[in-house]
Amino acid sequence: MRASFARLNAVAILAGVAAFVALEAMAMSLYPGGTWWDAHARGHRFWRNFLCDLEWRVALNGRPNPVGSKLAFAAMAALALGLGPFWFAAARAISSGGERTLARAVRASGAVSVGGILVVISMPSDAFGAVHGVAVIAASLLGFVAATLAIVGFIRARRRHAACLGVATMVAAVIDLTLYASHFVTRTQDTPLTPGVEKVALGLLLAWMVSVAALPERRSVPHEHEP
Image 1 (cartoon, one colour):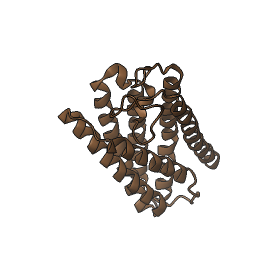
Image 2 (cartoon, rainbow, N blue to C red; image 1 turned 180 degrees about the vertical axis):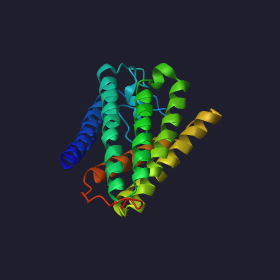
Image 3 (cartoon, rainbow, N blue to C red; image 1 turned 90 degrees about the vertical axis):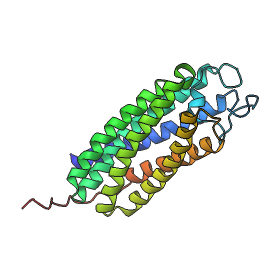
Image 4 (cartoon, helix red, strand yellow; image 1 turned 120 degrees about the vertical axis):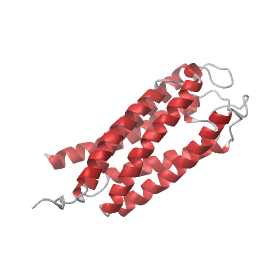
């Protein structure tokens, strides 16, 4: 039963990643154009457009984006739903290393962070303005809590590959959030570096999700207080 659940969980993670990539690629291909630094840019600019730009029903160049915006929303929803089983898989791997308290903390904080992501994608920046920015920062902080606990758990459970990918993801995400938050707080023009770092953090997150889904099963280590 547990092995079957673990396999289904892994499939759910991979399905979430695959759905996100496919839907996001379609949303990018349909994006009419425009960035925060060049409103006349044609089409999607991978390193210059934020993920949330794709959810705008009217693109930054002023042209309608009815289908692409829906695909972008569906892509982010698929990613959020893939993160649910990801945190459970991470907790399972940590628990098999004997770190059961940490595993429970990862499950709980991961579930809360997924809720935060769902709030963010349901409040696109074209409709909610600054509230969207506040939601992004709050959801990111929730995700950092879950990720930090997971990294500590992977280190203690001797899942070094998963721990290293987690650290790399966190570093990129912290840099991106710092850039984003400084622009948001100071109300100054953002730097084109921010959406680029966002893509790096996203790529590392997807790689981390896939690596955790592919973790080999280990026999559960008894808790140190158990007989």
